[in-house]
Image (cartoon, rainbow over all chains, first blue to last red; front, side):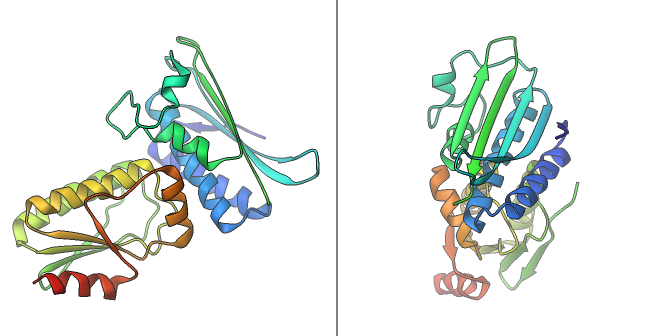
Length: 131
Length: 117
């Protein structure tokens, strides 16, 4: 699947729409679609604002027991995150937000993996399974 | 950037969000509402989010801030028409919309504001 660029607010909206379509077509309930699109919105904003732009990939995947799911990857080559545990803490923020973006996105999905190093960019991969 | 129109009905400002919200659009709405509140002396703001498919932490924070700004103009903000899936997601996200009241629909939102008079 092709990576979609995240360079502007328009791109963030485009990523949300792609995720919505993939989630609806693969059996996620309306509530799960909404959770995944909301998580995508948080993560795409992080890529844009903190990562200085990057890419998003939307993929359809199957679990070992054959359940369909939607997997999203967000990648940037920004400054990276020095303390990942801290970044995932509710209420901790590097900017002027509420500090719920990353920690909230994690709660809204079934699988969440964050890889980041200072100076080496950030990658976040999340999966939401249909029920 | 698209703009969200603000209608003045009596002493209430009415906003119905019918577009995909970008961060810039919400910030602009906040500024436009502050200007309108100052210019009109409106006592209430109703924001209809019936058509809004997601409220993430940024949009949620902006809605809260609109409520706080309205207070400074002696006006109250009511968010109406939240979709059930949005309500569930907002709660799981950990976001409470401080500073604003909520009502089921536009009619109930207006009743809430008029009850205040």
